[in-house]
Image (cartoon, rainbow, N blue to C red; front, top):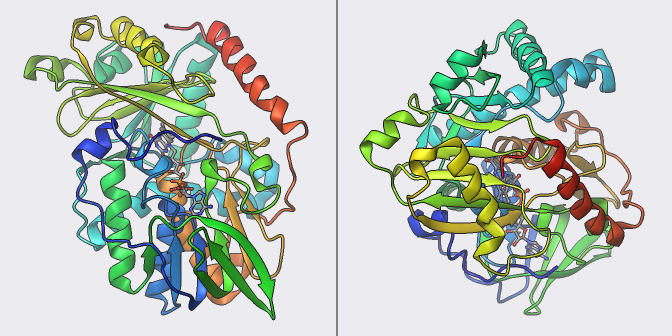
Length: 430
Ligand SMILES: Cc1cc2nc3c(=O)[nH]c(=O)nc-3n(C[C@H](O)[C@H](O)[C@H](O)COP(=O)(O)OP(=O)(O)OC[C@H]3O[C@@H](n4cnc5c(N)ncnc54)[C@H](O)[C@@H]3O)c2cc1C
């Protein structure tokens, strides 16, 4: 995989984030209880919660904390998984399904609780997340989803066409539902502040320290970085998600890692701001290749969605999102686009996050499915509990064998074909 240039320029989040924490490269051999590969939400939250338990740990990040999906996403904090609570029970049985539902329902709380507990300097709001129904069959889905979560005590509500239009400021959706547990963060600031909190708790975080290989010697893990320095650790946690390369065999072939694309306009006038998402929610829709949009903390309209699987080559790779803006919000269509960027998510074949333990003392967390701010923050907490105690009950998902996707190389071509197909069948706006 050929990653986009570093730094995140021209990402909106990079331009408006708090300064990066000091994370020098690893320049000498060290020994700790746990080595963590990957400095996104998953790795950083694992480090924070391990350090709080008094377990010594080192995070090795190839670029800088938040360089991956965690610093590039839409900033929409959305509880839940791609599966609804009754689907989780049908898939995992009554007890495990209910436990998973409780985990999924708690993920947004984790983010806002961490921000409050550590006094993080992260622009954030918690006015809810709305999912708009883009076609008639999805109106029933919106009703059902909202009712299922409401029965479990969650603050959710079905929105008919008129209320959806009122909340979103566009009349293209047929209905929707609101989950008031959701909200928004400046995602790169959140990653950087999570890193600072982990460091303050005692975790060591090294940037510019790509892991090249892992070997087990005498009951310990030797984690080797590109610069030659090695971390010796009792246990390792691999948290590289959509940016997983070949540092550990077969892992990258267990997921498809498509790019998700975003644009942000220049800050809108006060009048326009009042007409778009006027009550401060964030939103995504029920398309297979969903559209997600919101205003940021400085009044820009952000629009995200599909795009080419490959890395972008020029502005035309985002042109479809500009057409969506014009369709949803005609009054914004002449406002210049200020930022264009993209990042990779990791999708598994069953659309569930995967946990693997391919060798003793190694835990792998991969497959965020594109909704990971809450998920990976909460997963880090669970991984830390498991790494500290060895109790598998601490893990929200079953530990499964590493299973590669057959014909993985071809699957990239397949993703491109699926994108083209859904573009037609999603009653495309662009
Ligand atoms: C464009 C976009 C929009 C999104 N929108 C949303 C949203 O609105 N809401 C939401 O909840 N989720 C969203 N997501 C998903 C969310 O960003 C991810 O689920 C989440 O950031 C995953 O966190 P992570 O820690 O698992 O992985 P990442 O943040 O991707 O971190 C993995 C890290 O591993 C590092 N790494 C890779 N290989 C090595 C190596 N060999 N050695 C050392 N380090 C290595 C990478 O540099 C990277 O920093 C979006 C994602 C993208 C890309």
